[in-house]
Picture 1 (tube, rainbow, N blue to C red):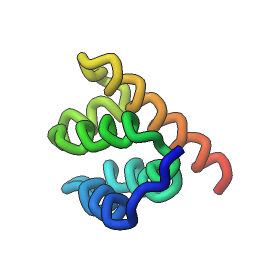
Picture 2 (picture 1 turned 180 degrees about the vertical axis):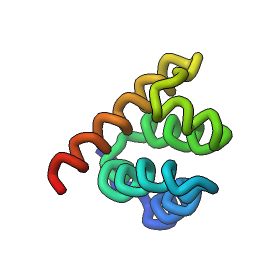
Picture 3 (picture 1 turned 45 degrees about the horizontal axis):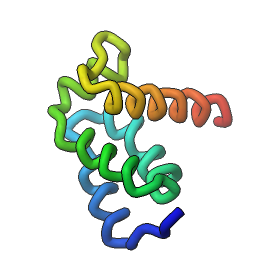
Amino acid sequence: MAMIRENDHRRMRWASRRGMLELDLVLAPFVDAVYPTLGEDDRALYQRLMACEDQELYAWFLGREAPEDPALATLVRRIVAYKRGEQARV
């Protein structure tokens, strides 16, 4: 696993700050704890996810809809699973 550059991590932290608190609460813990451990392909996928609209992300994270792209759908499930596990530790 290649170590990511700090400026890439900071850029994704900034991109993960959305216009909705609900999204921030899901994305911030994931980007802080998991993003640095992702491989290059998964980091690129996360960057694609951050290009999506807040309303899409909100519907996906609530499970109301799913991304048409199977790779994005897998990442959304991974983020939701991480958040559920993180909440269980609190």
